Image 1 (spheres, one colour):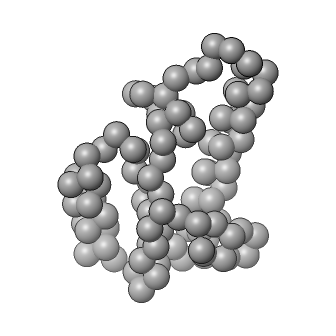
Image 2 (tube, rainbow, N blue to C red):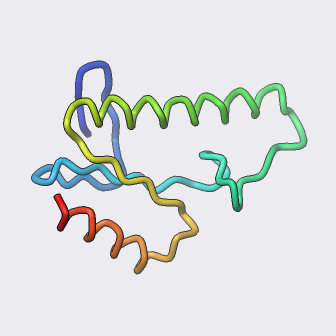
Length: 94
């Protein structure tokens, strides 16, 4: 759990010493441009819900960034080896 002014959030991975939060985003829930699908039924419910998720993701990134955190967002379809390499590169640069 990370708590900063205006936000409490549970990233999938937290590297406190590096002040880095990693989120692994699901293609449906976070509207992946490659694999996300638009619901065909009950769209009055789902489309606003998916929009709220996107808005929340932006807000989380902004507030964590303002508090000095680096945010890494990975898609669920990224192979785990590649995802790990990306995280290591960010941690080494920091």
